[in-house]
Length: 463
Image (cartoon, rainbow, N blue to C red; front, side):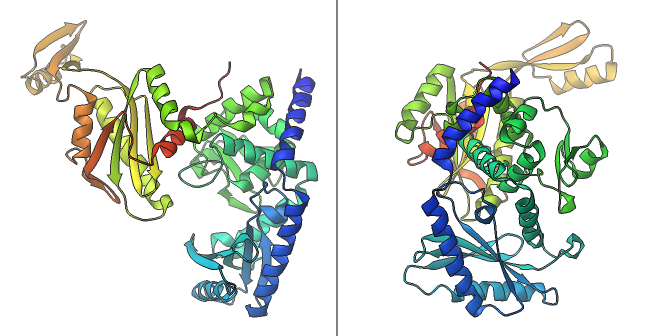
């Protein structure tokens, strides 16, 4: 059974590789671009600064059309952090000379430069870091990146590099790839480590089909651990210890929801391998409004959309706040007696959207459960607090109060949310003065909302 499934899976993998693996011409262009870029940097960089190309291109795990270049400028430890940041930015800017080339300053732990080199047709990140041989000498998080590259390059076979590509593509198609907070998914480095640990993509998928929590992996020694203290130490049920830094969990950014979706995807694929799994949930850009309308009709749900005001800041800053506000509104609605089936925060252009899918319900009144009538003090306090109740009822030894609901419909509650009467502002997300739409969307947001809905509920089923 296993041999047959693995053979069928490999046939699928071989077919997909023809579509996602960089062509010979693309690989040659990447080598040429790297040589041109490093040559230009050598002309301006100090002699004691090492230029090191890292990332998926040199690891041989990049996807077709995604041959972006990551160049690290490795400074001696004698330099101060402020100096390497300043000089790193200066070196990057100095090689932007050709017409059409440009740069952006990006921020991670410290600033780095993203170059858009039209003359080469590539995008390159120029990252200043300290050159270290031992993790104990690390001063910034990016210092270990060259060590990651060394570890991966020594251990991945050519076939495993292709399996990493397939894994990345599979995860991308199902919205599970990317270490950004919006995705809470698998990073490229984590994909590489998982293929190394499980030997192959099929081996990973087969093992993931039977995952039980917690999952604790020691990549340096290639073993699964049973040390429950690691769960507490890393505050996570999914721990993949970084082989170059024992104090780091590479899987820290993967949410349980994302991991759960991956487990279900793995079960479905290993049961019946098919190329269909590599083509996502059927997103069709031109039909999103009709597809969304069809979803609402088939599910019998209504869609409530609050267009909140968010600042022009990085999505990594705004999105976690938007998610928390969405969770707060869902909790508030459920406390009022309404059922929220799905809630989705969406950033679309400059808009922050809180999207809720819920059944139409009219709750003029609802029952409030109280304490046992035999607990006198608690029963009397409950009766006093609900003195205006429409009726009281005793079920068994428990007292209930039938009260008029503050909101008869979810729409009424959502209008108070949009007006800022329930939550005005939470850090960078402002609800006061927001617009509420019911079963419709702001102009230009349909694709982002539908794509987010697919990522939320478009699981591969076990059927």
